[in-house]
Structure formats: structure tokens, C-alpha cells
Image 1 (tube, rainbow over the protein chains, first blue to last red):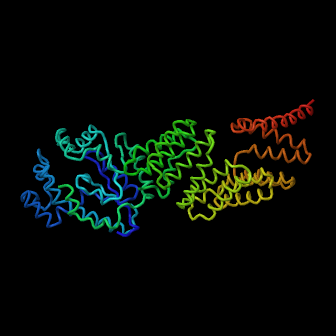
Image 2 (tube, rainbow over the protein chains, first blue to last red):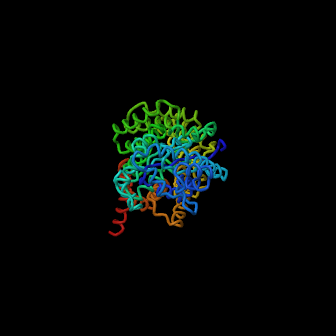
Image 3 (cartoon, chains in turn blue, red):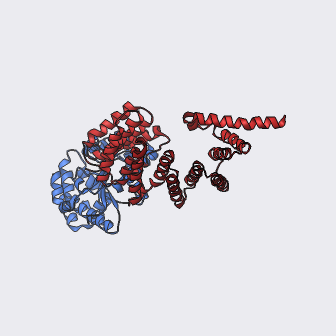
Length: 227
Length: 302
């Protein structure tokens, strides 16, 4: 990216915090938001190196006969009790290629003249990716609200399963202390839109933080932080 | 450390007519920013929150908020520091405490150093307000010079009000020719931007200056033209025009013709809170001159 490149901003937050709602509102304002989940899925299903490593680690059942990811199989193996090492292993396979793909997409958007590019990344800090961004927006909500939202979206999940997921993610209070901006998504859409509107008003006037030297940051480096 | 290159989006939170609402907006905005990672942006917002609190005349709380900003800025040369000095000066000035000019001067000097024209003008304009006579004029002239030369549209937006303030300073120092010239600039500036209300105010000021110069016939014609222009633009009646028409006719010795204008002016301006609080004598005079009209009418009926 050139020195007068676009600002690169991460949107993060735990499960049920409302990151995707925030991302959608930001999209409605005309900005591009790269979804790390979508990119990761694309990488898993299309990057032969990643696919092979996943099959070696988790078996042939990792992919359905049509080539798409067997989420249920993978979740049952990774998101179980005492799973920290399994999650780390999965991340070490998927994250480097995902970050590469996100950076490629961001560079293309930058070349197209976009001034601010957002990326929605749930596990930003857990993956050690925060330094790749100029600014971080954390989306937060009280745990009870987060659990309700997830149950609404995934009625098959139990409260305990969601609590386990929350526990596996970085502590929300800690994330809020790390992020540059915090959006408290606990009081309805109007307040949420006001908060986003305010931040979107500020961001284009903020300076670029991440220096061009940092572009040499390798994915191996980022992953080392998490392992 | 990060600060805003252009703070207009912080200022979008302002409603100067409603400082309580503005304070709430700044409080909400501050809650969204991490002072640990964006201390200068956070501090800049605190300076504006302090200003909103100050406008509610809660000076102690406003100074405490500025102290929080000061701790975060930690003397870092930045827009946040420029705005800290500016708001500290404004608080000192509005709380009738001395040394406000020292803070405006610090703000001005740093803003010039950082090429922050908008704030340099703001500081110079505040110095123009608190200094007297020639010094006031000097600061207004400096502010105009920066605004005229600035490449920043936001800085240029100051020009209309700067011309107006400067022209009045000349007016009150009885340099009517200079005042007239600058009121003309003010009128042209507003006309270019289709700011009709402000353009009408500039026209009124030009006519008022003509009266001060003793050009009564031209002053009368100018006020009558303004009256017609306002009517044509569907603007509401303006008591200040009626007052001026009365004063001009009175100065021409046409007392009987002047009285109904004074009566109309009094009718329109008697509920003006600013006049009630600041120009009580002027209102009383209008009432007195209006009564002449009422008395003469009563005499006619008799």
C-alpha cells in the first residue's frame, strides 16, 4: 500500500456482541467491510495447502462430498472441553492464509481509491492481528444480551455452549481497554447508529498509524504471538 | 500519538443554542474513545465538553474537565493543546477571571506553528474581543488576514463574521469610512454565499454607518430599499429597520414622520430578551419616542 493509503480498521467483538450489525451499518454508509469469517471460509475451501493440512489434522470428514466445510464436524472436534490447543492448531492452519487474503483484498480496495477499509474479525487479539490495523473498533454488550442474541440466531445452541465460547474468547473488558473505539451495543438500533455515525465522522480525519515498514509483518510472526 | 487533522466532526456534536444537549453528546462520544490509545482525541473531546459545561455557567466543573484534558495532553504540541488553551481562555473570560488573553495568545501561537488556521483565527478573534481599541483592531486584522490567505474552507468561513466584527470596531472608534468599506466586504462575502439574512444585516450596518456619517438621505434610501428587499424575500418585519427609519427622520427634523416608525420598532422589539437585558435605555427611548406618536394621534382625535 502507498504512504497515502487507505486507513485499515478492524471491527472486533465477542460472540453475540453485534459486530455484524455494526459492519452492515458501516456498509450502508458506503464503506467496504471485509468479513474475516467469509474470507476464512473461502480460504478453507479453496486454498489447497490449507485444505490438505485440515484433512491431515481433522480427517476426511472435515469437508463434505461437495467440497464445502463440514462445520459441524470441525466444531465438534475443536469447540469441546479442554480445547485450547485444538483451537490454536486450527488457527495456526487457517489464520496466516486468511490474513494474506484480507491484506490482498484491502490492497485492491486501496488501489481502487477507497479511503477507509474495514475488516470484521472476531478473534483479532486472540490471533495477534491487531498490529496490522490502524485502528480497532470493539463492539461490546453485556453477557446476557450476547447469549440471547446467539440463541435467537442459533436456537440449537445451549446457554452453556455459548458461555463456553465466550470464555474461550478474549475477555470483553480487556478488549475494550485495547481498542481505540468502543461501541456499546446494548440500547437499540438508534443509539447504535448514532455511535457508528460519530466514529465514521472521525475516522476519515485520523492519521494512518501502521507504517509502511510494518507491511513486512509476516503471517508467521503474527501466529507466533498466539502460540 | 493521534489527533484529528480537522476537527469538524467533533464540532458536528455541537448545538451552541443548547449546551446541555451538547454536553450529553460529548459525554456519549467520549465514552466511545479509549484514552489509553487515543489520548489526544479523547482530550480534544474533553475540551469541548468543558466548553459546553462552561456555557451552562458551571465553571468549577468546566475547569475540572479541562484539568482532565490537560493531564492527557501532557503538553504535547497538538490540536488538542491548541483547543485546551482556547477553552481555558474562554472559561477565564466568561467567568470574569483575568489572564484569559495569555491563554488565547498561547493558543494562537501554537495554532500558527501547527498551521491550524481555523483555531489561529478563533484565538485571534477572541483576542479581538477582549482587547480594546487599536489592539482589538490589530487582532481582528490578523484574523482576517489568516482567513483570507487560508487554503482551508473551514477557516475561510470565519470571514463574514470577522468583517462584521472589525467593521463595528471601526464604527465605535468613529472611523466610519473604514467601517463602511469593511461592511461592504461583509455584504459581498455573504452575497457570494447566498446567506441572505447575513447579507441583510450587512446592508443594515452600511445604512447605519451612512447615518453616522451624516449622509441622511442616502441612509434613508438604503433602509427603505432594505425594507423592500426583505419584504420581497418574505422575511419577517425587522424592528431594527423601523428604529433606524425613525432615527434618520428624527435627525432630518421630520419628527412627525419618525414617530410611527419608533412606535412600530418598539412594538417589534419590546419582547427582545437581548435588548431587555443589554439595551434597556435604548428600549426606554423607543417607548418614549413612540409615545410622542400616540400622544399626537390622541390629540388629532380630540
